[in-house]
Image 1 (tube, rainbow, N blue to C red):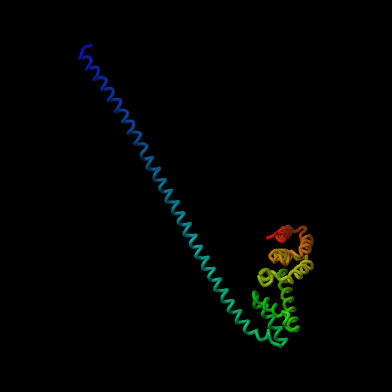
Image 2 (image 1 turned 60 degrees about the horizontal axis):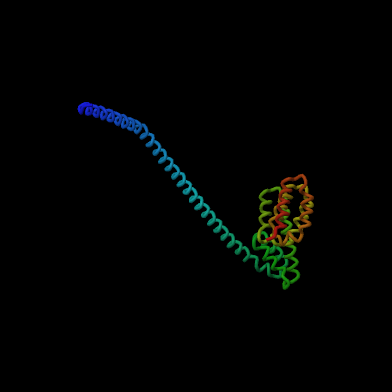
Length: 253
């Protein structure tokens, strides 16, 4: 092969290589033209999704902050209302203090009943103080009679036709003024036995018993269990509450 032939052959080979390289770059360019819009669309979607998530989180935090502020405002209003109530109760007590500690039995009796009703939180303990050993016997008797009557009224309220009266009776009987008072238990059990036809009242009684102090219910657990066995049959709601009550009494702290 002559030198001229070899040169011609090399030129042909170079031309072929140039064509192959060009085709490859053309293909890469075509693929890039397709992928670039897809990549941009994907990035745009990811950006939009991220922004939406951030917006949702921001709205959630804003809502939580608003709820917290609203709750704080409600708590403040309750505290103010409670403070105003205490001031009003103190004013009420100032009008009855002389009659409570005086010797006029008629005025004393009225004052004791008024304090028990007007001061649901502090009234029972104030009247209970009048039964102390150093108090004269007549005052003791008036105070004990008033306390018994008040308990009976509240227990009867659990069986009342008015939902508001039932709720008020439950709230007071389970408040700090009464929940640890052993004198509450007897009237509760007796009323439930005598009003077995009143399912709502029976249900309220069992719920109230559960929310009394264990120091009151535990010593009379057998009586409470007997009552539950008598009133729970065929009454699923009451049976469930009785189960909760029995579990509560048996729980050791």
